[in-house]
Length: 82
Image (cartoon, rainbow, N blue to C red):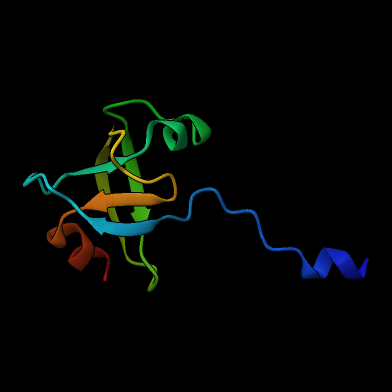
């Protein structure tokens, strides 16, 4: 029972943000393996939620240059999420 409390929560949808190289403010980019884990396809619409519970909608695409636990988005999308 005590070891259950010490285990870290499993949250596969929590990603760290990197700056995007694309200028499109409606898209985000993640790794293909992470897309498969989250059951997403190229061109799917995703709902993003920031730390302060602000939400934004974006289209997701895969890119092999993105790290597994990272997501790339533009500064405009980040400011919408705060």
